[in-house]
Length: 273
Image (cartoon, rainbow, N blue to C red; front, top):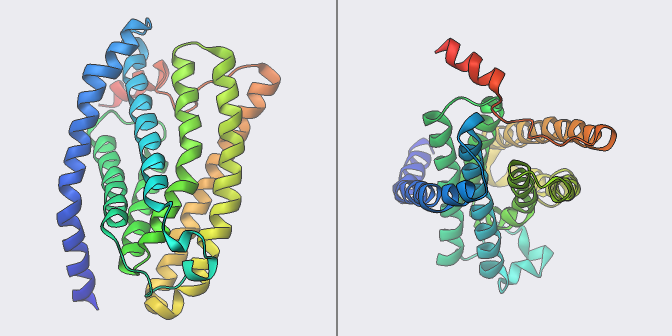
């Protein structure tokens, strides 16, 4: 079993790493030659890392939009998207090239995010982001190992839409579009709660817990429980942060990116280096 898992991880890493470097190259190119020029044209400066943060949000928005559209195109004709009973059969699914590439590409995306976190300035939300990315990678590996490519790909349609509204709201904050940014953040809050706290546990987490024990055995099953549990705790933590921002938006009419690298944090970071 151990040798099987090692071979499985090695074979998937072999295909994933080239995609990771491809995504990093594309990201750096877009940030340098596209997003940064847009930021400068809109009057942003390097003060308080505004251009850096704008570039980062533009990249995330670009990727999430492309990922959701790519996933919708790939999955629209799959039979298990129309049959609930067929969706959670573990060994009846024939893994197609388009679904395999979709899952590997998103696995590569989370690896690229970890590399970026480790190679750029430490952010306020470094710890929770690192935990989230590691959990996402573990869940994707588990889905591949259990022949649940279809579940991993469908998860993209549940989790990524809320991030589209979040990144768009952050971009509008940086550009000082007050009303549009608030509208986007309210939409983000609604989509976040529906998708991550209702549909994701109901459609993915609970069925996975229900059916996976007999497939993977007790050890991997309880690891699975810990990973899913950690992810839901993280989602609840972020939901609390979103609630605080919504509360401030309603009562103080202020919307800020709570994860931004403000001046005080920059000074503290530079002092500790």
